[in-house]
Image (cartoon, rainbow, N blue to C red):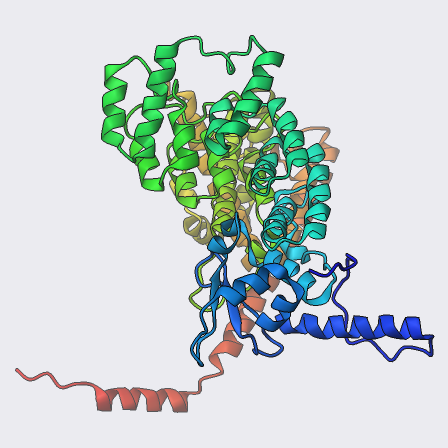
Length: 582
């Protein structure tokens, strides 16, 4: 392949005519214009003139390409297209990316188009923002998983298409990621370094993973044998006494591996037999973690019925099964764990909860893209939605619990009682000033079916103490009364706003308390009673205005239909009324 200068460029409209320049500048402008024009060929919206297709591992996803351009720019494609049999006139050669290059099944559309764009134009465009940025607003996006995945996928493509200058560029970028990424986000870098035979990068990754807290069983499952052996060797030499690195009980370890093998075969019956025949439990084998990472959702759901496993148990890395399921982004598994009692609030050693893990793994495009009719949401989106709903549900439940606790807590019980007393006083005054309306609103709010608070000081008699009532029963009774009175006041504000405003002022004055009216000298009492009467009159006037406003609204609504039309309606009804024969 011809050597090209790598440059990062953003999409730009057709360039304007350049100013007068020398031959060298003119040549550069012409090359850039040619590059821009060739870049448009990869845009399916421009002109569908591709004569071949590259199919991605994702079902139905293809990228149209032009054999003449790729063959002229890449020895890899030249040799590949030359070896293909001549297609029929109406057929396009179809290349399966998973079979075309090592690691091809991991390459997404954005990375493939970026590398193909380099072959077309000689320039490397930066990744689309929505494809290399996660949906976590608290992330700085320097080394979040979408950014890493884009470079990893691009490395697979560049290595497979034999573009050494791109491989070198991506290798340097991945090396930077290894130093700042989370432990588990280094795992895909290890895979690409091993697959694409990048020894320097692989050595750096092995050192980073060996000194991480990632579980040994997880590493053994994820990495090639030779890579895991090197990591294990470093751990044994550096941390010889770590229980994760030394097999203290070979029989126990063998039983654990047998359970994992049974899970690999989806054989829950065998798992049950192994649990009965040995002292090893699901928790000892971290079986729920293993199933959350590698098994089908139905297998995990069946596994949860076998034994009373702790779904919030943390492995040696400090991860619960729900954390593992979020890394996998499988909504069915997340639902099974949550329904079994997995906590969405548990955090990893670095402070991430399940929702944060999901958001850091999810591209912005997966959550914000517009869906065509009948198109399903991505699994990543569903996982985030499930966790957000569960967190909201937990928050509401905790608020209710804290409210009940606050009622029973001596330090806060007075605040609750004061709220209840204020509402009782307000409703009591409303019943004095306009009994019929107050009674109606209380019936709508079902306040008349709850028991009046005995602690009220003004308008109720002391209540006899029920010795059989437990604190929980009392809290529930008081809460029901508070809710009913609150709804009563809200309905009153909706239908009688003026009266409610005046009633607010009325209740804020100390002279509205009947006990206060009986204190002081006779002259003071006389002044207080006069002020009390004035406030009562203000409330009555406001109430009259509210009723007049309601009546006016009802009158304007009824004038829309005249008696003439009502009569026609009744006549029409009589004409169409069926006759019942006996």
